[in-house]
Amino acid sequence: MTQPSDDYRESGLEFPEDFVFGSATASYQIEGGVTEGGRGPSIWDTFSHTPGRVYGGHTGDVACDHYHRWESDLDLIAELGLDAYRFSIAWPRIQADGTGPANQQGLDFYSRLVDGLLARGIRPVATLYHWDLPQALEDRGGWTDRDTAYRFAEYAHLAGEALGDRIHTWTTLNEPWCSAFLGYGNGHHAPGIRNRKASLVAAHHLNLAHGLGVSALREAVRSDALMSVTLNPQVARGDHDTSPEAIRRVDAVGNRIFTGPMLRGEYPKDLLEDTAAVTDWAFVRPGDLELIHQPIDVLGINYYSTSTVRMAERDLPISQEGTLIPGSEQVVEFLPQDGPFTDMGWNIAPDAFEQLLLDYQRDFPGLPLMITENGAAYPDRLEDGRVHDKARIDYLRRHLTAVHRAVQRGADVQGYFVWSLMDNFEWAFGYSKRFGITYVDYETQERTLKDSARFYQELVRTHRIPA
Ligand code: FCB
Image (cartoon, rainbow, N blue to C red; front, top):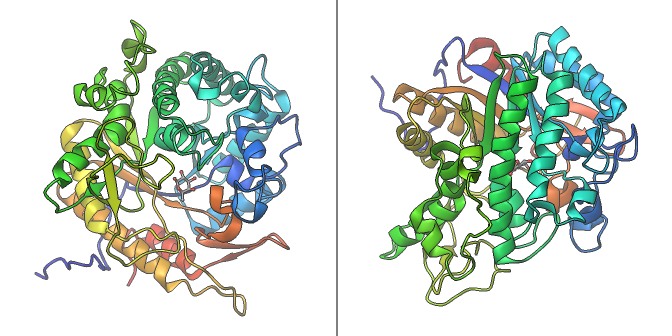
Protein backbone atom coordinates (compact mmCIF):
# COMPACT_ATOMS: atom_id res chain seq x y z
CA MET A 1 0.00 0.00 0.00
CA THR A 2 1.26 3.45 -0.80
CA GLN A 3 1.62 5.95 1.98
CA PRO A 4 -0.47 9.11 1.81
CA SER A 5 1.67 11.98 0.57
CA ASP A 6 2.47 14.98 2.75
CA ASP A 7 1.43 17.40 0.07
CA TYR A 8 -2.00 15.81 -0.36
CA ARG A 9 -1.74 15.53 -4.12
CA GLU A 10 -3.66 12.32 -4.59
CA SER A 11 -5.65 11.00 -7.49
CA GLY A 12 -7.94 8.03 -7.82
CA LEU A 13 -9.39 8.34 -4.33
CA GLU A 14 -13.03 7.36 -4.44
CA PHE A 15 -15.83 9.17 -2.59
CA PRO A 16 -18.89 7.36 -1.25
CA GLU A 17 -21.73 6.94 -3.71
CA ASP A 18 -24.07 9.28 -1.83
CA PHE A 19 -21.42 11.98 -1.38
CA VAL A 20 -22.83 15.21 -2.81
CA PHE A 21 -20.85 17.41 -5.18
CA GLY A 22 -22.02 20.92 -5.91
CA SER A 23 -20.95 24.47 -6.48
CA ALA A 24 -21.76 27.63 -4.59
CA THR A 25 -22.52 31.27 -5.36
CA ALA A 26 -24.05 34.22 -3.51
CA SER A 27 -26.70 36.69 -4.63
CA TYR A 28 -24.80 39.97 -4.53
CA GLN A 29 -21.72 38.41 -6.09
CA ILE A 30 -23.47 37.19 -9.24
CA GLU A 31 -26.96 38.59 -9.75
CA GLY A 32 -26.70 42.23 -10.82
CA GLY A 33 -30.14 43.64 -11.61
CA VAL A 34 -29.92 45.56 -8.37
CA THR A 35 -32.83 47.90 -9.09
CA GLU A 36 -34.99 45.35 -10.86
CA GLY A 37 -37.95 43.30 -9.72
CA GLY A 38 -38.65 45.55 -6.76
CA ARG A 39 -35.29 44.92 -5.09
CA GLY A 40 -34.28 47.49 -2.50
CA PRO A 41 -30.70 48.55 -1.77
CA SER A 42 -28.51 46.43 0.48
CA ILE A 43 -25.53 47.40 2.57
CA TRP A 44 -23.29 46.09 -0.19
CA ASP A 45 -24.83 48.48 -2.73
CA THR A 46 -24.12 51.35 -0.40
CA PHE A 47 -20.65 50.13 0.50
CA SER A 48 -19.52 49.39 -3.04
CA HIS A 49 -20.73 52.79 -4.19
CA THR A 50 -18.75 54.51 -1.45
CA PRO A 51 -15.38 55.61 -2.88
CA GLY A 52 -12.41 53.78 -1.46
CA ARG A 53 -14.27 50.79 -0.11
CA VAL A 54 -13.99 48.30 -2.97
CA TYR A 55 -11.04 47.74 -5.29
CA GLY A 56 -11.30 49.87 -8.42
CA GLY A 57 -14.68 51.24 -7.38
CA HIS A 58 -16.23 47.97 -8.56
CA THR A 59 -19.86 47.29 -7.65
CA GLY A 60 -22.35 44.45 -7.95
CA ASP A 61 -24.65 46.52 -10.18
CA VAL A 62 -24.20 44.11 -13.08
CA ALA A 63 -21.92 41.39 -11.67
CA CYS A 64 -22.43 38.20 -13.74
CA ASP A 65 -25.88 39.39 -14.82
CA HIS A 66 -27.20 36.14 -13.41
CA TYR A 67 -30.53 37.86 -12.72
CA HIS A 68 -31.10 37.68 -16.48
CA ARG A 69 -28.92 34.73 -17.36
CA TRP A 70 -30.02 32.32 -14.66
CA GLU A 71 -31.41 29.79 -17.11
CA SER A 72 -28.21 29.36 -19.06
CA ASP A 73 -26.32 29.32 -15.76
CA LEU A 74 -28.48 26.42 -14.64
CA ASP A 75 -27.67 24.70 -17.92
CA LEU A 76 -24.01 25.13 -17.06
CA ILE A 77 -24.54 23.47 -13.68
CA ALA A 78 -26.36 20.65 -15.41
CA GLU A 79 -23.57 20.31 -17.96
CA LEU A 80 -21.11 19.90 -15.11
CA GLY A 81 -23.33 17.13 -13.76
CA LEU A 82 -23.51 18.63 -10.27
CA ASP A 83 -25.77 17.03 -7.68
CA ALA A 84 -26.51 20.26 -5.86
CA TYR A 85 -26.33 24.02 -6.18
CA ARG A 86 -25.85 26.36 -3.24
CA PHE A 87 -27.16 29.86 -3.91
CA SER A 88 -28.28 32.67 -1.66
CA ILE A 89 -31.52 34.59 -1.58
CA ALA A 90 -31.16 38.36 -1.55
CA TRP A 91 -33.19 39.59 1.40
CA PRO A 92 -33.81 42.99 -0.28
CA ARG A 93 -35.45 41.20 -3.21
CA ILE A 94 -37.95 39.63 -0.80
CA GLN A 95 -38.41 42.69 1.39
CA ALA A 96 -37.04 45.84 -0.22
CA ASP A 97 -36.61 47.63 3.10
CA GLY A 98 -36.37 44.57 5.31
CA THR A 99 -39.89 44.63 6.72
CA GLY A 100 -43.48 44.02 5.71
CA PRO A 101 -45.08 41.72 3.17
CA ALA A 102 -43.05 39.82 0.62
CA ASN A 103 -42.32 41.30 -2.77
CA GLN A 104 -43.91 38.79 -5.12
CA GLN A 105 -41.49 39.51 -7.97
CA GLY A 106 -38.58 38.64 -5.73
CA LEU A 107 -40.16 35.39 -4.61
CA ASP A 108 -40.97 34.57 -8.23
CA PHE A 109 -37.36 34.97 -9.27
CA TYR A 110 -36.17 32.39 -6.75
CA SER A 111 -39.17 30.18 -7.35
CA ARG A 112 -38.28 29.95 -11.05
CA LEU A 113 -34.66 29.30 -10.13
CA VAL A 114 -35.62 26.47 -7.79
CA ASP A 115 -37.99 24.95 -10.34
CA GLY A 116 -35.24 25.21 -12.93
CA LEU A 117 -32.86 23.33 -10.65
CA LEU A 118 -35.37 20.61 -9.89
CA ALA A 119 -36.24 20.23 -13.57
CA ARG A 120 -32.55 19.56 -14.19
CA GLY A 121 -32.29 17.11 -11.30
CA ILE A 122 -30.19 19.44 -9.16
CA ARG A 123 -30.73 19.74 -5.41
CA PRO A 124 -31.44 23.32 -4.25
CA VAL A 125 -29.48 24.44 -1.20
CA ALA A 126 -30.51 27.94 -0.18
CA THR A 127 -28.73 30.40 2.08
CA LEU A 128 -30.94 33.13 3.51
CA TYR A 129 -28.23 35.59 4.41
CA HIS A 130 -25.02 35.92 2.45
CA TRP A 131 -24.32 39.47 3.62
CA ASP A 132 -26.78 41.61 1.66
CA LEU A 133 -28.70 43.21 4.52
CA PRO A 134 -31.42 45.63 3.42
CA GLN A 135 -29.94 49.11 3.80
CA ALA A 136 -33.10 50.30 5.56
CA LEU A 137 -32.33 47.92 8.42
CA GLU A 138 -28.74 49.12 8.59
CA ASP A 139 -30.09 52.65 8.90
CA ARG A 140 -31.75 51.46 12.10
CA GLY A 141 -28.54 49.91 13.43
CA GLY A 142 -28.20 46.78 11.31
CA TRP A 143 -26.85 43.82 13.22
CA THR A 144 -26.15 45.98 16.26
CA ASP A 145 -29.91 46.39 16.60
CA ARG A 146 -31.62 43.44 18.24
CA ASP A 147 -34.70 43.99 16.14
CA THR A 148 -32.78 42.93 13.01
CA ALA A 149 -32.80 39.34 14.30
CA TYR A 150 -36.60 39.44 14.52
CA ARG A 151 -36.84 40.98 11.07
CA PHE A 152 -34.63 38.15 9.80
CA ALA A 153 -37.02 35.57 11.27
CA GLU A 154 -39.90 37.27 9.50
CA TYR A 155 -37.99 37.17 6.22
CA ALA A 156 -37.08 33.51 6.81
CA HIS A 157 -40.74 32.72 7.28
CA LEU A 158 -41.72 34.48 4.05
CA ALA A 159 -39.01 32.69 2.09
CA GLY A 160 -39.96 29.40 3.74
CA GLU A 161 -43.64 29.77 2.89
CA ALA A 162 -42.88 30.47 -0.76
CA LEU A 163 -40.07 27.98 -1.40
CA GLY A 164 -40.28 25.57 1.51
CA ASP A 165 -41.98 22.85 -0.50
CA ARG A 166 -38.93 22.56 -2.79
CA ILE A 167 -35.71 23.55 -1.00
CA HIS A 168 -33.70 20.56 0.20
CA THR A 169 -31.40 22.34 2.67
CA TRP A 170 -31.81 25.75 4.28
CA THR A 171 -28.82 27.66 5.58
CA THR A 172 -29.66 30.58 7.82
CA LEU A 173 -26.40 32.55 7.69
CA ASN A 174 -23.22 32.40 5.68
CA GLU A 175 -20.10 33.08 7.75
CA PRO A 176 -21.52 35.23 10.55
CA TRP A 177 -17.89 35.79 11.59
CA CYS A 178 -17.41 37.94 8.49
CA SER A 179 -20.67 39.80 9.03
CA ALA A 180 -19.77 40.63 12.62
CA PHE A 181 -16.02 41.19 12.55
CA LEU A 182 -15.35 42.42 9.01
CA GLY A 183 -18.65 44.32 8.88
CA TYR A 184 -18.60 45.95 12.33
CA GLY A 185 -15.08 45.22 13.68
CA ASN A 186 -12.41 46.18 11.17
CA GLY A 187 -14.76 47.65 8.57
CA HIS A 188 -13.35 45.78 5.59
CA HIS A 189 -16.85 44.68 4.63
CA ALA A 190 -20.21 46.44 4.55
CA PRO A 191 -21.40 48.36 6.48
CA GLY A 192 -17.77 49.32 7.14
CA ILE A 193 -17.99 50.03 10.85
CA ARG A 194 -14.95 49.81 13.12
CA ASN A 195 -15.99 49.25 16.65
CA ARG A 196 -15.00 46.42 18.92
CA LYS A 197 -18.12 46.36 20.99
CA ALA A 198 -20.35 46.65 17.92
CA SER A 199 -18.78 43.54 16.43
CA LEU A 200 -19.64 41.49 19.52
CA VAL A 201 -23.16 42.87 19.70
CA ALA A 202 -23.55 42.02 16.02
CA ALA A 203 -22.27 38.49 16.62
CA HIS A 204 -24.91 37.96 19.30
CA HIS A 205 -27.72 39.29 17.14
CA LEU A 206 -26.56 37.10 14.26
CA ASN A 207 -26.71 34.13 16.62
CA LEU A 208 -30.20 35.18 17.64
CA ALA A 209 -31.19 35.56 13.99
CA HIS A 210 -29.97 32.05 13.32
CA GLY A 211 -32.04 30.54 16.13
CA LEU A 212 -35.15 32.54 15.37
CA GLY A 213 -34.66 31.84 11.68
CA VAL A 214 -34.48 28.07 12.17
CA SER A 215 -37.68 28.18 14.26
CA ALA A 216 -39.46 30.32 11.68
CA LEU A 217 -38.38 28.04 8.84
CA ARG A 218 -39.48 24.91 10.68
CA GLU A 219 -43.00 26.34 10.87
CA ALA A 220 -43.10 27.15 7.18
CA VAL A 221 -41.24 24.45 5.28
CA ARG A 222 -41.74 20.78 4.61
CA SER A 223 -40.85 18.57 7.52
CA ASP A 224 -38.00 16.75 5.78
CA ALA A 225 -36.11 19.90 4.80
CA LEU A 226 -32.68 20.11 6.43
CA MET A 227 -31.65 23.06 8.59
CA SER A 228 -28.12 24.37 8.72
CA VAL A 229 -25.79 27.30 9.18
CA THR A 230 -22.47 27.86 7.44
CA LEU A 231 -19.46 28.88 9.50
CA ASN A 232 -15.92 29.69 8.42
CA PRO A 233 -13.83 28.24 11.22
CA GLN A 234 -10.74 30.28 12.02
CA VAL A 235 -7.91 27.80 11.90
CA ALA A 236 -5.02 29.26 13.87
CA ARG A 237 -1.71 27.52 14.36
CA GLY A 238 1.72 28.47 15.61
CA ASP A 239 4.76 27.09 17.38
CA HIS A 240 5.75 30.08 19.49
CA ASP A 241 5.59 29.81 23.29
CA THR A 242 2.53 31.97 23.40
CA SER A 243 0.83 30.36 20.40
CA PRO A 244 -1.43 28.05 22.45
CA GLU A 245 -2.92 31.03 24.29
CA ALA A 246 -3.31 32.95 21.04
CA ILE A 247 -4.95 29.94 19.38
CA ARG A 248 -7.35 29.64 22.30
CA ARG A 249 -8.35 33.27 21.95
CA VAL A 250 -8.86 33.05 18.20
CA ASP A 251 -10.91 29.92 18.70
CA ALA A 252 -13.04 31.64 21.34
CA VAL A 253 -13.86 34.81 19.43
CA GLY A 254 -13.64 33.29 15.97
CA ASN A 255 -15.41 29.98 16.42
CA ARG A 256 -16.89 29.19 19.80
CA ILE A 257 -18.67 32.56 19.83
CA PHE A 258 -20.98 30.92 17.27
CA THR A 259 -20.78 27.20 17.96
CA GLY A 260 -21.21 27.81 21.70
CA PRO A 261 -24.66 29.37 21.59
CA MET A 262 -25.84 27.67 18.39
CA LEU A 263 -24.77 24.13 19.20
CA ARG A 264 -24.40 24.07 22.99
CA GLY A 265 -26.69 26.84 24.20
CA GLU A 266 -23.98 28.85 25.96
CA TYR A 267 -21.31 31.47 25.45
CA PRO A 268 -17.90 30.07 26.43
CA LYS A 269 -16.68 31.45 29.75
CA ASP A 270 -13.22 32.27 28.39
CA LEU A 271 -14.75 34.36 25.61
CA LEU A 272 -16.65 36.45 28.15
CA GLU A 273 -13.45 36.89 30.14
CA ASP A 274 -11.30 37.76 27.12
CA THR A 275 -13.74 40.46 26.09
CA ALA A 276 -14.65 41.81 29.52
CA ALA A 277 -12.88 45.12 28.91
CA VAL A 278 -15.08 45.75 25.88
CA THR A 279 -18.46 44.66 27.09
CA ASP A 280 -20.29 42.98 29.94
CA TRP A 281 -22.48 41.18 27.41
CA ALA A 282 -25.60 42.71 28.96
CA PHE A 283 -27.11 42.65 25.47
CA VAL A 284 -27.63 38.91 25.92
CA ARG A 285 -31.12 38.78 27.42
CA PRO A 286 -32.60 36.03 29.54
CA GLY A 287 -33.95 33.33 27.25
CA ASP A 288 -31.76 34.27 24.27
CA LEU A 289 -29.59 31.19 24.51
CA GLU A 290 -32.62 28.91 24.39
CA LEU A 291 -33.83 30.76 21.31
CA ILE A 292 -30.45 30.42 19.63
CA HIS A 293 -29.86 26.79 20.52
CA GLN A 294 -32.08 25.10 17.93
CA PRO A 295 -31.38 21.64 16.62
CA ILE A 296 -29.85 21.66 13.14
CA ASP A 297 -29.34 18.78 10.73
CA VAL A 298 -26.05 19.63 9.14
CA LEU A 299 -23.23 22.11 9.78
CA GLY A 300 -21.80 23.94 6.78
CA ILE A 301 -18.04 24.51 6.81
CA ASN A 302 -16.24 26.98 4.56
CA TYR A 303 -12.50 26.51 4.44
CA TYR A 304 -9.75 28.31 2.54
CA SER A 305 -6.61 28.72 4.64
CA THR A 306 -5.09 29.14 8.08
CA SER A 307 -3.35 31.75 10.17
CA THR A 308 -0.23 31.65 12.30
CA VAL A 309 -0.48 33.36 15.66
CA ARG A 310 1.19 34.26 18.91
CA MET A 311 0.35 36.77 21.62
CA ALA A 312 1.25 40.34 20.77
CA GLU A 313 3.44 42.25 23.15
CA ARG A 314 1.14 45.21 23.18
CA ASP A 315 -2.35 46.03 22.01
CA LEU A 316 -2.52 46.32 18.25
CA PRO A 317 -4.78 48.79 16.50
CA ILE A 318 -8.06 47.29 15.37
CA SER A 319 -7.52 48.44 11.81
CA GLN A 320 -4.62 46.06 11.49
CA GLU A 321 -5.46 43.03 9.43
CA GLY A 322 -6.39 40.08 11.55
CA THR A 323 -6.56 41.93 14.83
CA LEU A 324 -10.03 40.85 15.68
CA ILE A 325 -9.72 39.88 19.26
CA PRO A 326 -11.53 42.67 20.99
CA GLY A 327 -10.46 44.27 24.16
CA SER A 328 -7.90 42.41 26.10
CA GLU A 329 -4.67 44.01 27.29
CA GLN A 330 -2.77 41.69 25.10
CA VAL A 331 -4.09 40.62 21.79
CA VAL A 332 -3.18 38.19 19.14
CA GLU A 333 -0.56 38.87 16.53
CA PHE A 334 -0.99 37.30 13.12
CA LEU A 335 2.40 36.32 11.73
CA PRO A 336 3.56 35.94 8.15
CA GLN A 337 2.57 32.57 6.76
CA ASP A 338 4.49 29.91 4.91
CA GLY A 339 3.48 29.47 1.29
CA PRO A 340 2.42 28.41 -1.20
CA PHE A 341 -0.27 31.05 -1.58
CA THR A 342 -3.25 31.65 -3.81
CA ASP A 343 -3.89 34.96 -5.56
CA MET A 344 -5.63 36.16 -2.37
CA GLY A 345 -2.32 35.74 -0.56
CA TRP A 346 -3.96 32.94 1.43
CA ASN A 347 -1.72 30.03 2.33
CA ILE A 348 -2.53 26.56 1.09
CA ALA A 349 -2.88 24.10 3.97
CA PRO A 350 -4.92 20.97 3.21
CA ASP A 351 -3.56 19.23 6.32
CA ALA A 352 -5.29 21.84 8.47
CA PHE A 353 -8.52 21.20 6.58
CA GLU A 354 -8.39 17.50 7.34
CA GLN A 355 -7.70 18.24 11.01
CA LEU A 356 -10.49 20.81 11.19
CA LEU A 357 -13.05 18.31 9.94
CA LEU A 358 -11.88 15.72 12.46
CA ASP A 359 -11.95 18.29 15.27
CA TYR A 360 -15.50 19.37 14.47
CA GLN A 361 -16.62 15.78 14.22
CA ARG A 362 -15.11 15.12 17.65
CA ASP A 363 -16.54 18.26 19.22
CA PHE A 364 -20.04 17.89 17.77
CA PRO A 365 -20.62 14.18 17.42
CA GLY A 366 -23.72 13.22 15.51
CA LEU A 367 -23.79 16.45 13.54
CA PRO A 368 -23.03 15.79 9.87
CA LEU A 369 -20.75 18.25 8.10
CA MET A 370 -21.06 19.72 4.63
CA ILE A 371 -18.23 21.58 2.93
CA THR A 372 -20.23 24.54 1.69
CA GLU A 373 -17.23 26.40 0.24
CA ASN A 374 -13.68 25.62 -0.74
CA GLY A 375 -11.72 26.94 -3.68
CA ALA A 376 -9.03 29.34 -4.80
CA ALA A 377 -8.44 32.57 -6.69
CA TYR A 378 -5.81 32.66 -9.40
CA PRO A 379 -5.05 35.25 -12.09
CA ASP A 380 -6.62 33.25 -14.90
CA ARG A 381 -6.17 34.10 -18.55
CA LEU A 382 -8.50 33.15 -21.35
CA GLU A 383 -6.43 32.01 -24.32
CA ASP A 384 -7.89 30.51 -27.48
CA GLY A 385 -11.09 29.74 -25.66
CA ARG A 386 -9.38 27.86 -22.84
CA VAL A 387 -8.28 28.63 -19.32
CA HIS A 388 -5.46 26.37 -18.19
CA ASP A 389 -5.88 26.87 -14.47
CA LYS A 390 -3.48 24.18 -13.33
CA ALA A 391 -2.92 25.83 -9.96
CA ARG A 392 -6.64 25.73 -9.14
CA ILE A 393 -6.82 22.06 -10.08
CA ASP A 394 -3.89 21.46 -7.78
CA TYR A 395 -5.62 23.36 -4.96
CA LEU A 396 -8.83 21.39 -5.45
CA ARG A 397 -6.97 18.10 -5.64
CA ARG A 398 -5.19 18.78 -2.37
CA HIS A 399 -8.34 19.82 -0.53
CA LEU A 400 -10.41 16.96 -1.91
CA THR A 401 -7.65 14.65 -0.72
CA ALA A 402 -7.95 16.25 2.73
CA VAL A 403 -11.73 15.72 2.74
CA HIS A 404 -11.30 12.15 1.63
CA ARG A 405 -8.79 11.46 4.38
CA ALA A 406 -11.08 12.99 6.99
CA VAL A 407 -13.93 10.79 5.76
CA GLN A 408 -11.67 7.74 5.93
CA ARG A 409 -10.83 8.65 9.49
CA GLY A 410 -14.47 8.80 10.46
CA ALA A 411 -15.66 12.34 9.80
CA ASP A 412 -19.27 12.39 8.61
CA VAL A 413 -18.76 14.78 5.70
CA GLN A 414 -21.70 14.52 3.37
CA GLY A 415 -20.62 16.64 0.47
CA TYR A 416 -18.47 19.34 -1.06
CA PHE A 417 -19.38 22.58 -2.81
CA VAL A 418 -16.67 24.26 -4.80
CA TRP A 419 -16.40 28.03 -4.54
CA SER A 420 -17.35 29.10 -7.05
CA LEU A 421 -19.47 28.09 -10.01
CA MET A 422 -18.14 31.15 -11.85
CA ASP A 423 -15.92 34.18 -11.39
CA ASN A 424 -17.80 36.90 -9.56
CA PHE A 425 -17.73 40.04 -7.42
CA GLU A 426 -15.23 39.16 -4.71
CA TRP A 427 -16.43 41.65 -2.08
CA ALA A 428 -13.76 44.27 -1.22
CA PHE A 429 -11.59 42.91 -4.06
CA GLY A 430 -14.24 43.55 -6.69
CA TYR A 431 -13.66 41.65 -9.92
CA SER A 432 -9.90 41.53 -9.43
CA LYS A 433 -9.99 38.02 -7.94
CA ARG A 434 -11.28 35.07 -9.89
CA PHE A 435 -12.56 32.10 -7.88
CA GLY A 436 -14.68 30.44 -10.55
CA ILE A 437 -14.30 27.08 -12.21
CA THR A 438 -16.03 28.95 -15.01
CA TYR A 439 -14.40 32.04 -16.51
CA VAL A 440 -16.58 35.11 -16.90
CA ASP A 441 -15.74 37.75 -19.48
CA TYR A 442 -17.31 40.77 -17.80
CA GLU A 443 -17.50 42.71 -21.08
CA THR A 444 -19.55 40.15 -22.93
CA GLN A 445 -20.82 38.05 -19.99
CA GLU A 446 -19.62 35.02 -21.86
CA ARG A 447 -18.92 31.98 -19.67
CA THR A 448 -16.10 29.56 -20.47
CA LEU A 449 -15.47 26.37 -18.55
CA LYS A 450 -11.92 26.42 -17.18
CA ASP A 451 -9.81 23.27 -17.10
CA SER A 452 -10.72 23.02 -13.41
CA ALA A 453 -14.38 22.74 -14.41
CA ARG A 454 -13.48 19.75 -16.60
CA PHE A 455 -11.56 18.27 -13.69
CA TYR A 456 -14.55 18.80 -11.42
CA GLN A 457 -16.96 17.40 -14.00
CA GLU A 458 -14.89 14.23 -14.16
CA LEU A 459 -14.77 14.01 -10.37
CA VAL A 460 -18.54 14.31 -10.14
CA ARG A 461 -19.05 11.72 -12.88
CA THR A 462 -16.67 9.11 -11.48
CA HIS A 463 -16.63 10.05 -7.77
CA ARG A 464 -12.85 9.69 -7.99
CA ILE A 465 -10.24 12.42 -7.88
CA PRO A 466 -9.11 12.56 -11.52
CA ALA A 467 -5.49 11.92 -12.41
C1 FCB B 1 -16.10 33.44 1.60
C2 FCB B 1 -17.43 33.98 1.16
C3 FCB B 1 -17.69 33.86 -0.31
C4 FCB B 1 -16.45 34.11 -1.14
C5 FCB B 1 -15.27 33.35 -0.62
C6 FCB B 1 -14.00 33.55 -1.39
O1 FCB B 1 -15.71 34.08 2.77
O2 FCB B 1 -18.47 33.30 1.84
O3 FCB B 1 -18.75 34.71 -0.63
O4 FCB B 1 -16.22 35.46 -1.25
O5 FCB B 1 -15.05 33.66 0.72
